[in-house]
Image 1 (cartoon, rainbow, N blue to C red):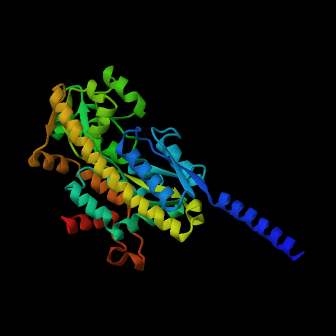
Image 2: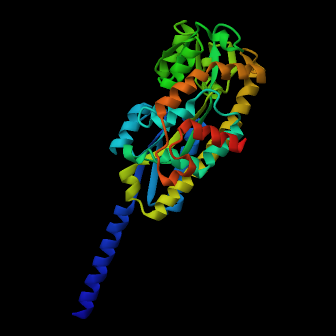
Image 3: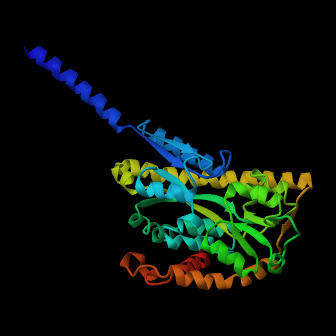
Length: 346
């Protein structure tokens, strides 16, 4: 009788053990709008691979590139609602939900890539933005990147702000980008990404602003003989996850996700640097596109021309909450804090 009872208990233990293992396993979805070969997508896969390895296969993340799961705004709403687990969302789109991140897109904000990376790596800086996510049903894990944004056009070489006056330029449907190009005297045209090539080819628009890497990948340079390495806005994304899903993870799993996010941005940035070098070399070799680089004086002229955009968005975004955890930055405007951080790391 005792042996039979022991056998029964053992069988039940094994059954429940296997059940627990099956319930513990999770398959998550991560959405990205970039094309499959883009460094941001490769970074997302690095994130997924790291999580799978460190959780011993308990958590698998499937990465869906090229907007397979919807446009950025749609995916952001899906993550909020819990029908999508994770995504990389550009600050331009995310600003519709979390206004504070609009400041990342301000034109000519970052004096250099190196300074930008140091500021964003500052834990205090990250916290002041990440704290705005939970009230929207989201948790920010880290950054992604879609490179500095440049300008390609069908008309002429562009070196100074006056060169774009009256030019019809396709832009992301974001308040910062729309106001930037209006302030510069251009005619910004919001347009779905898939329509840009035909619009350039047919003369519906004269130009489009995107990282040069994206412009080459999407073949915009086939119909734009002029490119300006404007580097006017560092297109950052936030790696974010649904808050309920995040809170369902163990503390150990949460740390794995944070570590994966740190690895992901490293892969993203290194991949972007490699791809950009190859793209510039290819454009020079082909000789079909004139690539213009700004002098320091020319860049200063652009910076001066867009200052009204800073004043507008400093007021619109407002101040950091007046809480003790924000130290001396409490009550300061978000833009003032960003400028101080930039100065600190220059």
